[in-house]
Length: 200
Image (tube, rainbow, N blue to C red; front, top):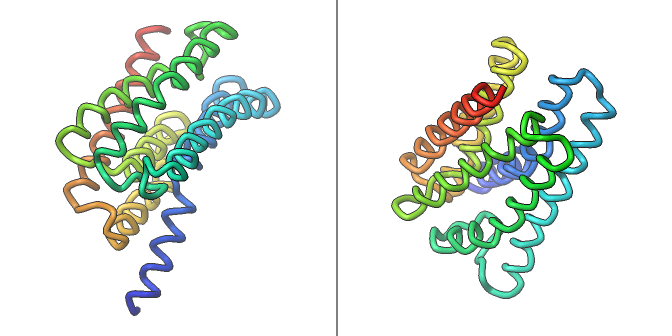
């Protein structure tokens, strides 16, 4: 397989398993697991998608204005700017989730977990450009496994090495950055679940 073909597949996989996709899927899957109501889960999934779209707009506008070099925020210093711009959006998401449904609502717990995750990524970003793609993919797979059982973990586990491979082929991350992203994904998921158990 030549380099052009490898790059094509790596780019395609990076798009298919973009963190945005997982941020869209996870709220629906969490709420559905807790309620068993697909329409109710869709409603709160749509609520989350609205904030994902705003987050995406930050990157699009930032890129047009020259603040970001690409959509992957490949430069470490660009990520610090993005995290700073993301904080107000995330705070509104947390406040609205708690206001409408209370702190014990699954999305409220997820939003608190995202806050913790962003804090961790901000700190790590001062030292190393950890892979967000891999981190979010790992968080998704581990989260699905915990929510729906080990069978679903096995069914989705292949996503992680595929995403890691694509990020390294595209030279967006080194192996250390990929491993760091994976470790952070596990850490953030475990902290979120711990927070949820403490609250419940």
